[in-house]
Image (cartoon, rainbow over all chains, first blue to last red; front, side, top):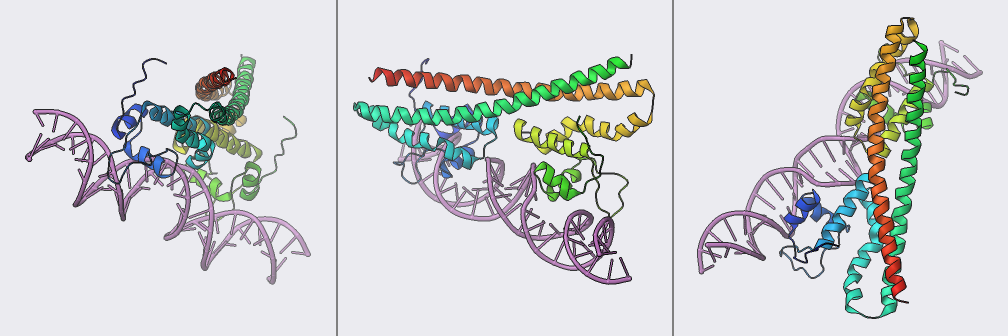
Length: 146
Length: 146
DNA sequence: AAGGAATCTTACGTAAACGTAAGATAGCAC
DNA sequence: GTGCTATCTTACGTTTACGTAAGATTCCTT
């Protein structure tokens, strides 16, 4: 929670900060993986915030670590996409019901991710166990040669 | 180590047993990811053993869980490829030095895989921790609305 | 206001990892 | 030997996730 600058960034900065390229950012917007401000008129430069950078980083991570296709990812974070649009709504209202609703959606979204992450980790654990067992078995055979 | 049939399989059976397709098996052979018996003459059917099925399964797993390209995978299991060719040699000789050499190669190969698996698991752990923290934070905010 | 760098849109190109189709052959059953 | 099915080789097609190029525009600086 250190100084999160609210300075607006341009696509080049965002791509550098996330280790991607402008093309990738635009592509993600094109397929609906990134919001893409509705109020940007044709030809104008895109404008981003630190929250967008975080979002892209999250996407990259889920893509790489879970091996999800961008389409599956879209579905997975779809709730968050809607939520991103609702963030303004959240900040512009004091209605506790609205707040609760939005926060609850976030919870579901996170629960989905957690499940995938844990499944994946379980499979990796299993693979590791098998590799360790293999190694042990080879060590044993090596010892028997002595 | 239960009854591992030494019956020879054909490409269709191998693909079914590994959840792939004949095309995939041929493709893996084409790019050198699978050995491809040197003694098969043009046009004859490919013949596989249970060991080949295990090999394919291992490849699929590494591909999916570690997100490796087939080229990286080729490099990673390259030692094993050579080893597969040396298995006969292993079984056809009683020379302990040869045995030791081959087993040692296997150890290196397994060590490489283990390192990748553990790195990956570490990243997943990190991601999980962050997700859990996020969730906790949201729960807290929800509680404060009550 | 001017000029240059970054960004815009549009559209075609590309690498990886197979899919698919066609015509020929192999292998097993009978 | 005949027939049928699975496999073979060859080669072009397809999808995903961007790369790249071109010409126009925007934005910031001076």
